Length: 353
Image (cartoon, rainbow, N blue to C red; front, side, top):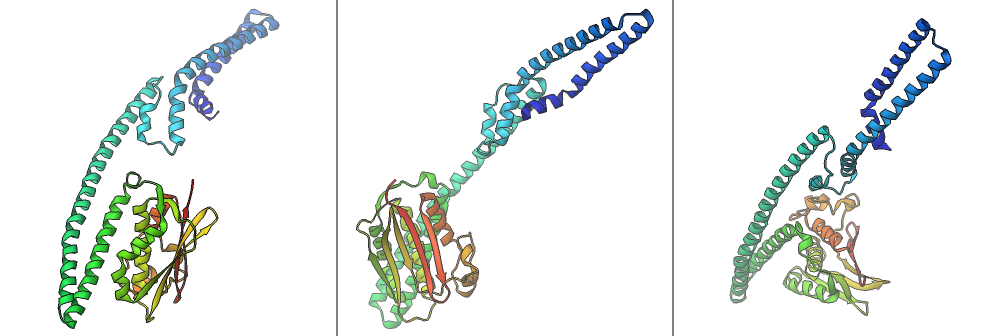
């Protein structure tokens, strides 16, 4: 109905012209009636025929014009209101039926061609950028790993002072490695749909591997991981690599902020338990906690909040990446925190489709 209204509105001048012409003819007939003495009944009948014929011919012309105009106009309207459409959809428009639509179609095709060329150039530049990031990260990680091994060897063979220095060096090298991993995962996140596979994953095994990879950091910081598996079955539907990345980011945050507190001994409690058709992974630290006013924003990109200003090393990227990964995998994430007590992060995994 909306398109019909637009169609008639654009042709209002033709309607006015047709009926205006008919009224002029009727006025002329009225003058002839007075001059020649034609019977009024005959004039009224002839006037009715004239208006009926005018309406009939006008409807024929409008119907023909509407049949030419409608397909292209309806395609434009559909494209305009379909938010999922991209400029590629312009090529699927029906053939134009009028000269004005032909001009519009030429402009739309020109827009589509420019869009396609710019998108191709952007995608090419983006692929080259990703390739560079991957190459750079891998090239940096090799000497970083070698430097870590050298520091470990020299520390084991040296004096107490050398061991302390090498331990501090290992800690900084570990931070560099984590930063490189973060860069790599941020780059891969742009192509997430091509880089994950949902399969059955043993969640307990993934957690143990993540904790094992950080065992030296746990020992160095005096924080003890405590894993409790309270579910008979720990298989979930996820992507092992991305799930491990998300869990590792949370554990890394717990270690980073836990090290800032003055508690002599800390426990990082990791619990896996069943909740109906889902499996919950809870990671509870004894760190400084998150201020209530910051809690709603901790998953926003580059938001560091009060803790970021209070403690060094915050980037505001880790939890944002975790939330992105969790959302992409179809899991859920919940963050609870009490300031000066600790933070509890809960992953919610489905166990079956």
